[in-house]
Amino acid sequence: MKIAFSPCPNDTFVFHAWAHGLIPNAPELEITYADIDITNRLAASGDSPLDVLKVSYAALPWVLEDYALLPCGGALGRGCGPLVLTAGTRTDAAALSGKRVAVPSDRSTAYLLFRLWAAKHVPGGVGDIVIMPFHEIMPAVRDGHIDAGLVIHEARFTYPSFGLSMMTDLGSWWESDTGLPIPLGAIIARRSLDLPAITKWIQASVAYAWANPEAPREYVMQHAQEMDAAVAKAHIDLYVNDFTANLGDSGYEAITTLLNRAAQEGLVPAIDPELLKFQP
Image (cartoon, rainbow, N blue to C red; front, side, top):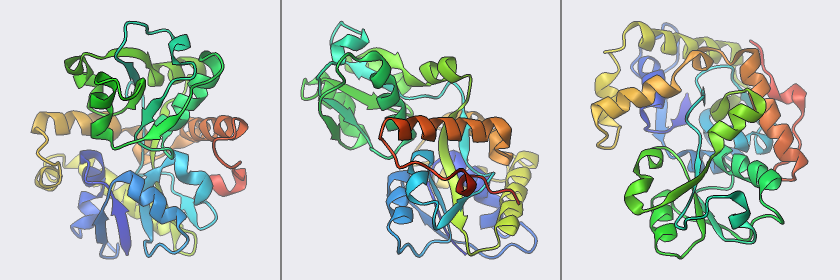
């Protein structure tokens, strides 16, 4: 079975057991390690050779005809949202009116959260949206090439070293506005496959990792791109949670709320609720 997921610790932790033949009756995996922006495009291309992929929830409206959202294996969370950063002293939302904002992707939860927040808080809306590699965003804001930047992951902890100020924590805004977790990464599988079986194999892989937390360590660190072991563990602890085993009602509510709000703003195509929820 051909699968693609990121080399991030949460994904390698989740899929370690299946990748190493530890799940009874599960087929051998042919794994492609790829950034989520790449898998988003592959899934939406219409000619992807992959059976199972990790994508952003924000990409679902473009892929649900061919791929089903599985109720496990992905990432939803709290306290892990993206930030909007500026180099100036003004941190009120009005300062973004008509300004240029750099984002790492236009098919990510971070991007949707930013646009939904801006629609409510930035008078007249922002100006140009500039897509640039994630690692270039903070230097570009610092050097004045861009007015503000949307950042994710470890930038939550490193932005002060660039002399930048936080305008807003979009995760905190989303959670206070909706009471729901932040939908980040989803696992999807071709609708022509045995979806109940794939769901069981992924859930078994998650259960194995939780029952044997030391077993995935070498595999996780092999792909962790020089990440410190303590940071990798914190990453896993944050992103591998109850939603990874089963989205549950609140998980589906978070996904539906995000995509419906984004569709109302014209950011994504409207989704068919019948296509969204697969129950094995």
